[in-house]
Image 1 (tube, helix red, strand yellow):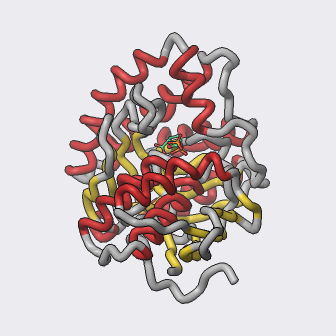
Image 2: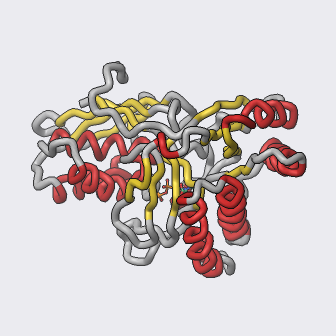
Length: 323
Ligand code: 2P0
């Protein structure tokens, strides 16, 4: 089974888990699945006697990280199967571009299909539930377009397809292609357990996500953009206050943030967000894309820019895949 997925970029952030160990998010996230950044995964049933195994970019992954995921796959799909998967990303992995969201979504969809679930809403819902156990953001990447993962929810909800907002663009500015040293999982746990700003972050996120969802419903770019900025800045503020502090930003990240502020001061809508890495992702509308790209290029000439837009849902019959 070949599965193509794309990463889920949170416009409003998930950061921190509910107690109980089931990888349930503490905050509601509102996200868009990005077109043009692809994860291609080949999933097959493992041979008798062979255990579950996952390779990403040719590297065998730590089995312990995947064991709860595969155990849950067998439970959810009433399947005795073991699975072997190999996955390739068309973009840097583990660098703050949500490769774990597209990776676990592809794996969950592949396991569902191999277990005999027909493609459709039920298979997607179960795959979202399973993907969440791998990485909470992956629950969203099971769907294209715009998605919501409510606080405490087991699965994401598809909100709207990519055609809902045709002018919606995201410019991804790559401040580095290097892999990050701190995993999101470890960093958010450190924030939860040691940052005095974690509880206020979670409390405040309820209001931000409610208002952002309303702005999304109104297709109000200005309002949504402002709320996106509050969400990522407050998430990073809570992480910065952890012990030891979690700091993802590089000098180019700051230059890009300031370039967005300068664009807005000129009346051009450009609202940035950042995840667990130094990359800056800028939301703008298509008519302003050229001006935004030019400003970002000038602010950080060394940074590669990738222009993306809301993408379609996963493709389970993709021709191309890892060989
Ligand atoms: C998000 N991030 O909502 C947030 C914003 C990063 C910042 O979800 O522990 O790899 O595997 O559930 O999903 C990245 O963390 O974490 C993430 P786990 P995940 O997209």
